[in-house]
Image 1 (tube, rainbow, N blue to C red):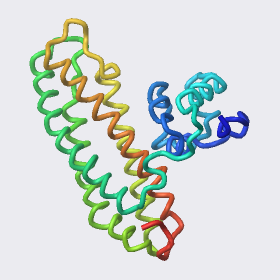
Image 2: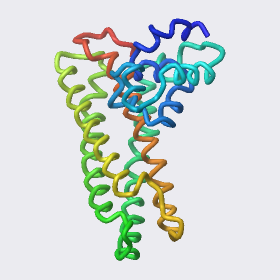
Image 3: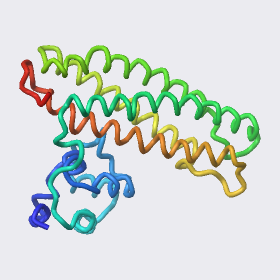
Image 4: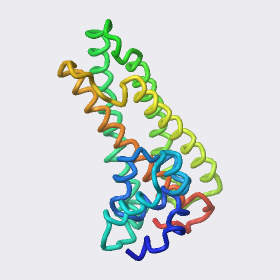
Length: 234
């Protein structure tokens, strides 16, 4: 495919940009554990090296996933107002709702299996803290940042975006803590239905949050990072 014809050039592109413009790339990156949201500014070559992956093989997978050579994905060229609305309805409300019941499930598992060596002890606290942080984070976006974007930018938008990026890093750290406590969101072979449901729900939440942060860090935010006037797609 033409987009991947020059392997050296493609290997030097950032994984965030690749995920934003190449259909199917985000799924491949998730399969290989490549961080394309908070770590979206790393090159494909660096990301492959970090995960001990062969970059040529990874490029071949990306090419196979998009044989038509399409250059744009859903969100890369969608208007900013539409993308913001999608983020609010598809992710903001969903995250908080799912965290509420994941906390309940985690509490049941911790209580019922407190003597198990592999019980995710402390998971409730991690999830509760994450919910509190995300509640404030999303409110700041919806009340301050998103209206600023819809108005076309402004002198304070770079600082606001930097703050949101830093908080996204905190979200990523929370996901890592969840993975450590739950052994990669995997229930033991003899786990009860509640434990299995918890791991399934955590995996869905993890994948959603990764995609959410990707849409903001790699697609929405770059449109406004250097704007002080109405020069971004509205």
